[in-house]
Image 1: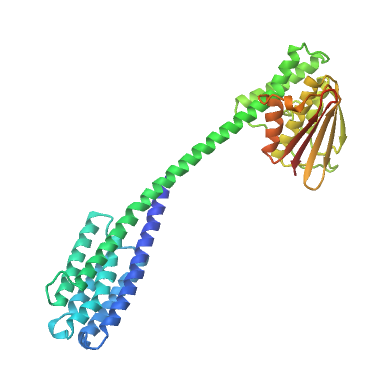
Image 2 (image 1 turned 90 degrees about the vertical axis):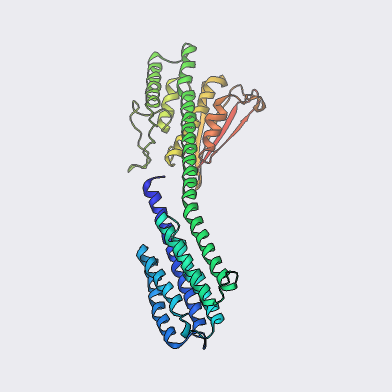
Length: 397
């Protein structure tokens, strides 16, 4: 986690603790003073002095909730100890047991709440210990019995212990939680990076399978039916693709902004990545000996990632026709409606039994079905021996 992130968490932690001290301290002070105003608990002179000091005490709590300065902690503790002292002057006390009970919320609640912000350093811990001892001693004096095992003393001790443990737990647990969050975030980033690398690897493998390997297969068969110029042009396109993959450059999506005539601009053939435009698909198979009859709409208006997947899957289907169908002609019909663009690739070749498709082959499984699935599309295959093959590709708009 960055230094700025750690500092932000520390500030939020301090804000939480100081505002908690303010809320608890003011609430417990009000409760305690409601007990002090009961007739006979303390005389009017001491009560008036305690009220004045109580106002100072509440002001320190209020300022502590916003400024977070240790000065307000010290002033608040001093005012609190002064209140515990002044209300038990012997001649001012008429009901020691009632006074002790009235002071429990103040000494064990309002005063003890300062412990929430006094556990972060040695000097603060020393202040905490001194305040705790002084508070317990003054409440013990109020009881007038010197008995440490009594309700007032025990309640005050319990209050200080609870707030001290709470302050220590919050102070130490938040940084640990921040470290765990950072560890989870780091693991998430590593997983995301690995997923991105794997996705890039799959994309590169598909492109190599759909283009370079197809060209090498064509050359291995001596380019039957294909001119030398077409082979050179195809090899140049593949070399351009390999160069981009080597440099780690993802082929740029085509410009989908229609021109004034409503058509989609097609980049120059020399710069176009194979399969990224409908025109490039037509050119590719036109020059390697597969005659494709195009039907339906001539416009494919899709988001760039969907268009890439759609056209690359379409190109792979045509490549399968060229390599496996035993014919030199295929038909492609492209249609669309309000939600979907679909292409139907049909040939009258030898066909095959769909159940006999090897699951290890990348052509249909990865380059068509998986590629379309990543953008929310589907592919359906219909074929039987001697009856040709039809593939229906669908992608959402």
